[in-house]
Image (cartoon, rainbow, N blue to C red; front, side):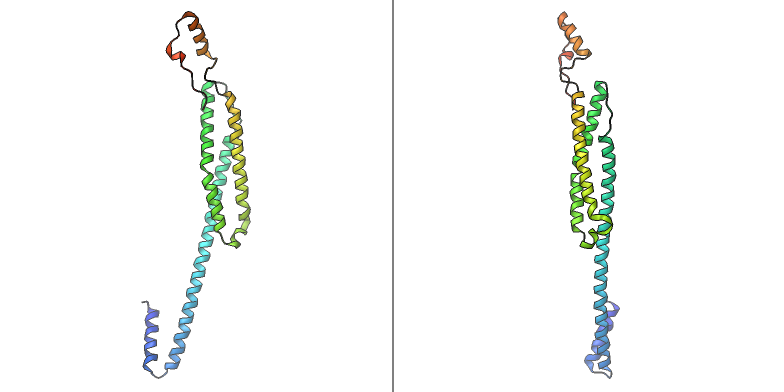
Length: 193
């Protein structure tokens, strides 16, 4: 027990023994106990408010991280870069697939923000546009997904078919006419993925 609890116990003992001024000691004990209870309630309220503020700042920080990621991903997905050879086309398609997988991977982050916003106290959701921030992020996320899908469909025709009419196909035609087609040339190249 702490010093306050010891003082209260000694005071109760004095009141119990019926010493002179026991009435006054009893009044002071009740006053101290009431103040201690009120202080405990204030401390609990303060702790709750600090937890709420920490949750708000955590939401704001994570929303800012998602906003930054969205900006970068939108810039990558919206790149007008086109290529003119097979190697570059395959490389660009691979990079785009990685961006699309990263976009899919961020769905849980958006869902976690929705949960965090739902857990905030009523008054905090209205502070500094917090409630409007999540719908804006979700809208940008959908925009990013649509842009990656559009970009995928733009890149698909640029990817070589399994039987490209490039240099090796010409060599196959020539080799076929001569009756000597190396086995490495007969393998179909994989489509752009």
